[in-house]
Image (cartoon, rainbow, N blue to C red; front, side, top):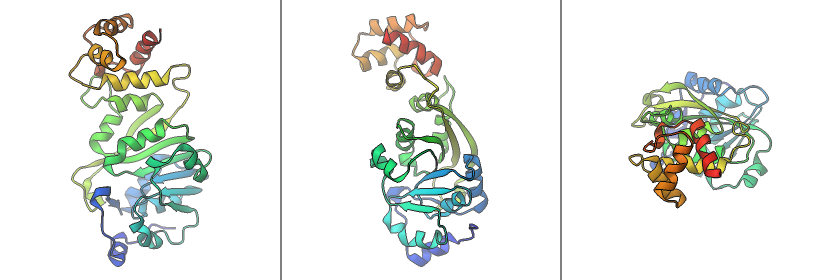
Length: 278
């Protein structure tokens, strides 16, 4: 199952046309493909869900290691390309469905049990796709995703930095994220206008056991609603309370009246959630 296919030749031979609206940028460098798989921590016996089959090159690299690969793709025009690029693989199932439109139960009819996600994501669906798995009840163990560099920085940011955002906290609530490698735009075909990075998110659904995660998510989203406003202003608007009431809870949790949401850590938001719960 060596990854010795020539993707450019296959694409030319099948007259496939790239769909800009779908953000299609494929990877053909074998060393990079194998490195992404290594970064994901996939081992023999793992079930892997790939989002965005694309030209099938990453699919092949995953299939060399994993027990089973379910690869989801929305563009049926890729069928003739994949018939050639994935030929000879008996542990790969390509599913022409949009994961973002599937309910958990529909997804579990196809993929049952624990799995790891690996994806070279179209940039425009990165955030909804990551959140779709993080906030689901699916048995996902990790997500390893190729994303735009600035999104990677956001997923792994620290408090009180420009990249720190609501999605940073959303990731921290359920696991830990790290950038495993940076990737030049020149590694893609066709080349996008920005550089990328690989991010691995390891899931731990017990991380906030006993906490009101729904409330925490609302607090985090609200805090970053308008970055220039104080936390009290944002929370009063989101929770339908007066600014004085919001300030009272913020101070009771141990923070300054004029504090902004981007300086608080996940532990700080947990403290704040206790005040709102009370």
